[in-house]
Structures are given as structure tokens and as C-alpha cells.
Image (cartoon, rainbow, N blue to C red; front, side, top):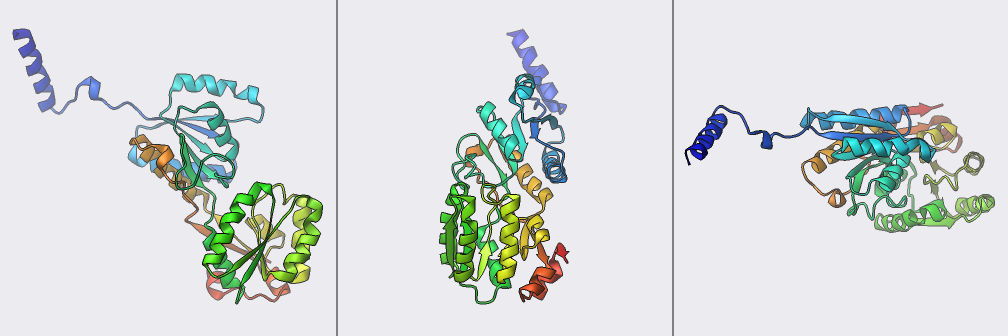
Length: 318
């Protein structure tokens, strides 16, 4: 009894002195980071995420892994994570996310800079991701894209778009959004890349502008050049899916601030570390946009870019 009483007094003295018992000391936060490259977009995304994470978890330890194309070169990653035992995995880009999901179903995964995570099969839905993954996508809200189109093309009523099986799910949603803002989406499915010329002729005859979606099955270098050149010849405004398309001749596009996307992902990481279920955290969409336009294209098809958009343009191609 005397020994038990002595232990109680020692514990009380330690607590009064401002210390905690070893059992209650918080362990460091280990986070595995999967990347596929060292591009500026990847670097900026990570910079934004790490800044936010370190603000709440100054003791965080990041373990970075470069994911390769060849699966056998990634075997060391699987072995290393077994030793590290990270609290979660932070991925940048679709390839790194796919590798993480294929190999680590029991570790929370927060992805960043992923295009179309639902269509890619990474999550069940944007609002309810399910499973062990969530994150910050590159998706720009469709209503925001249509709003920009409406500001640039007066009295816009019909928007044209090409799509393939890859992006069919996105088109279904886009039709609903278009109707909700008083517009009609004229969508033509492309089953064979050879059908693009006829589809473009049809859209040019029925739509007042063309909206494009990032679909690698549809927009290879050759078909992209064809669409851009002939949209210009037909005088129909074309909204690109990246600034690179604008540089090549599209009228305009909305682009991302990758650091801001990283900030979103970092905030989600902090929620998961605090105990939140990743499957119940909605996937975020882009909330910081950059506007790019092609001045030469605007002059060629006689479209005036509103002064308020000219004033905030991130890049003007001439």
C-alpha cells in the first residue's frame, strides 16, 4: 500500500511540474509523399501542402518517394513504407495516386493535382469519396467555366463539346449544369478520331461556342491542331482546357494555381491526421483561377475580351 501511495505521489508531482507521462507523449507525424516528376507544377503543389501541414504539425517528417513507370522499380517503395509506417500518404498527380491506391488500401491517401478523380476511379463521388482516399482535384466547377464563356460570348445559348467514353460521365453532369444556367449543351460523342472533322462542322453550325474537356483519347497533337485551325477558320470561339491550348490558338482557358491546390490538400491532410475519415471528406475543386487568352485569335474571329478579364489576365498570347 505504501509503495502504491508513493507511486501516486510521484505521478502527481510530475504533473504539477508541467510534465506528462511517457505514455501520453504524442509521436511524430510521418507522411509519405509520392511524386512522379519534379516539374514546376509538382514542386509548387508540394510547397503549398507542406506549408499548411507544418503550420499545424511542426514535428512532421516527410518521406519522399519517386514513383517510376516500371512496376519492379517501385518494389522498394512498398518495402520502405512497411518500415516507415506513415500516418498517411500524400500523392501528387494521377500516376502517383493510382500506385498508392493499388498498393496501400489500409493507409489513408490524400491526393493533390488530380484531374477528374471520379472518372479516373479514385473516388466514388466528389462529395462522398468513400474508401481510404480523398484530396484536391484539378476540376474547375463547370458552372464557373460556363460563366466565363457567357461573359466572352454575348447572348450565348448553345455550347458545343466533343467527348469520348473517357469523359461521358462529365458530359452528363455538364448538361445538367448548362440547363440550370439557361444554356444548352450540344454534345457529340467521338468513337473514332476520324469523326472529328464532321463533328466540328456540326458544332460550328449549331453552337455559338465550343467548350473542350481534357480527354487524351480525343485530343492528340494532330486532332488538336485540326480543331484549333478549323475553329479559327469557321470563326467559332473555342475555350481550351489548358493555357497550352491557348498558346496554340484557342481563344481562352482557365488555368490553375498549383500552390493553391497544394494548400487545399494540406488542409485535408491536417483533418485526416486529426482523426477525420478521408472517405467522408469531400474532394475539393479549384478555387484560385488564372485567366489566359489569345489576343490574335480574338481579333481574327472578332471577339472582344471584356475589359475586366483583360485586366486580370495571367497571360496574353499575341
